[in-house]
Length: 210
Image (tube, rainbow, N blue to C red; front, side):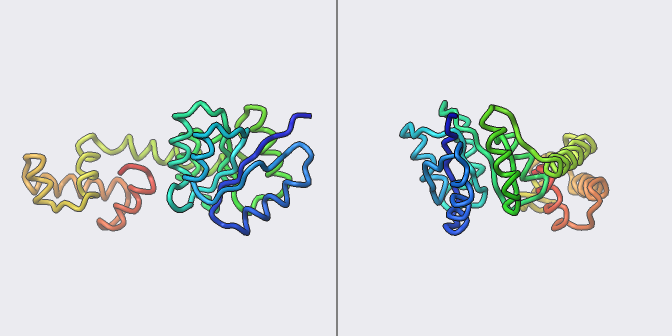
């Protein structure tokens, strides 16, 4: 039986130790390294450290999980990332999947699912539970609807609103009248079903529109 070489990347020492203790009982899984942030992990990878899978936290200091996923894609290490996070919203899950994650687990997942995910991913397959898949699909369907209902000009205006520009500033930048920008802004608020700029920025961010 070939051992699955695994790295744990998480900034909480207690969580890393608990995970290692849990997995130590499995004959086919070997923890080869435990690191506290993305920089430490990428240093291992850049030094040709051998591993099959990394259990990767998203929220880490110095270099977060998203940046690690991005950098991993640019290497030929062959290591397969499984994100293990406390974030259960579709935005995070979809973003990780898009950036090359082989799986996504919540930190409260049970032992059986964790081991199943590791063994599934080790075979080169993706692992997203029914609950996680549903959250991701719901987010992606909402996002595509939002993208389709905003015109190109409205998307451009939304991007400039997000940078903090005033109506007058946006009008000057796009060489149109302030009234035109106010009309675009009103249409965007209506289409995204929000009442003010603060709500607009929050929803647009959640939907990856800005």
